Length: 70
Image (cartoon, rainbow, N blue to C red):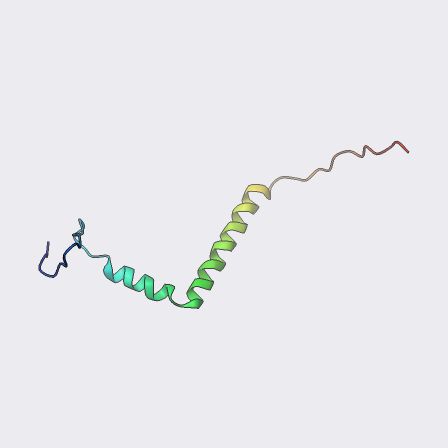
């Protein structure tokens, strides 16, 4: 591993590759409002789709009419 450019207190990565370019790209993308809006929209659409998958197949059958007194 290359320890020449390591700062004091900075730990070495156990992987043979660096995640820094990927993390830099993620930070740059997250700084854009359009990207955050798109990700939030996808999140809510997936949430709605999951709820439809969980509860959409059940057939609603109303209870029998009980109010027959008056």
